[in-house]
Image 1: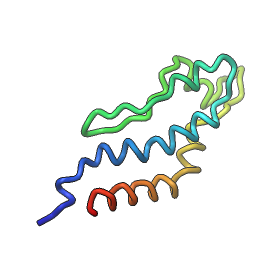
Image 2: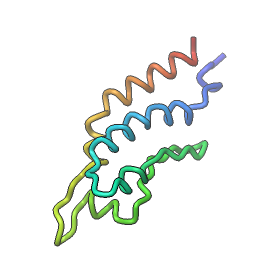
Image 3: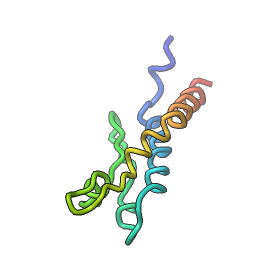
Length: 97
């Protein structure tokens, strides 16, 4: 009897992904707010994506020859690893209880 097979891990990943999303939005430089507001979680069932839908998102993250990079997503991922894993563990334990 393996109860892990009954767990919907996409739901767990979605909950944990909100940790990264929250930090990414806090890190995002704001001019009009469009870049920050274009970020969301997309749960496809077998995959969970953190989407940044503004067309210029990569230019802000990585910079251009005319504009310095203002990373917001990569630092959010790096800075929330421990919290992400803690949330994953808590969510799994809740479902196994």
